[in-house]
Length: 625
Image (cartoon, rainbow, N blue to C red; front, side, top):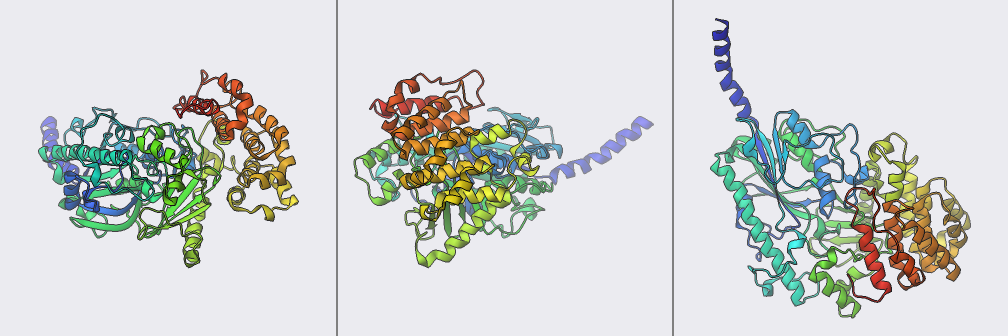
């Protein structure tokens, strides 16, 4: 009798359990690499993307979505964590840090709620995974492997539109290069037209894969049980798109489809073939998917849900960032509202177009750079190869190519101030750790999480003071710096303030170095390797011959992986490369530097060899590698 009663109970509960499963939506994310809004549904008549366009007709597209980072690893780090990577020190291209102890990667919360979570297939996070994140993460991962009636969250990532595919030859053409609209910042050459046309060809191939993902859901009778997101992972793989936190590098398509039964979870104003003007970005994806599944997003997440039970009000701004890009060091932050994009350069002495080995394999990059050397570019095209203004402001409504900088236009003074204040307020509220040199950050937090260290008072005692130093270094005029101010900055007990003092001297060239020469010489023996390298670069560039010899000795030693950490070596080799012919006296010493050591941080093996190759090619008068 007991067995019969138990069996009857199970039979009675089965319909209830099935209804619970039916009330929980499946979610599929379809992503594609290195593509912006160059799609038919975003008004691009040159594009051939019928499947994505059909999805946009079924669902709703967001007119303004930013990837936060203009390159894959930090962009994916933003998504998987629901945090701004600079708040965790994880903003550089291919770094490896610990997550905050109190935080999980968002699929872990979904799995705890009973979801079957798959990733097909790329991870590429800058953070150490805190335990098992996915039920399966591989090229074979698929929602079909779930248990019966188990809700699923599945990611399908398509790589066919990646930057590396734009330059593969031979290539079967789909689009005629003659039909390309060349942006104002690119020269109109056959190479540029070919790369752009091939990019559109790859988008067409990618679109077919998106269609296959949707067809699988239809064939499984799951389309009306599944919420679908489609988005690109950052701007196109073309130079000045990928790697730059302009709108061109951050603006991606975002399309969401909610079947009728789940429209109560849809964003406000959702409708088929609709358009949302809400500003969204990748940091919002984790809290949004949790909200859709009825899970309250953890309070520490820095994004905002734009759908589901815990949806929030529309934000006023979205934010972008650029850190080290492969082997090249930089620090740029950007912010956008509905109409304007503002960029703040913290290292304006470095050109946009620093030599990144991977980027220079694209034909467009090489022909564009050669035309710069030959003096054959328009001012809009040549801008990319020069040093940067500290501030940039663009009206993307009227200047979508972002070539007319309004930062010095009195008519836009109030807009500039508003955008600047929004950016610095964001950096302060998120405790953006990009103001700490990478080597310094790893030296001070060799284990554990930089995010936790900062909030536990173990990293920067006075964040605002260091942020002010970083801002002042890039903008403070030489004539305003008194002897007392210089003395205070260069002898400050905080290493990072001394680093920015050296950067101020370098940014201000001969005047900055002459005003602080004695202080810079003292910093060659600083306890911080980041300060030593920064002081040496300033003295090497703008000091006298005696200063140069001292600087070269410091830089060669810092570039030696047997005596330095890899992040110090990267900084030192960047400085040596920037010295050009001034480093010729140590050419043989540079050639003898080790390219790697036994213990290297994950995913950093290629950077020192690339820098050495480029530096030696320049010193030997050879073509670019």
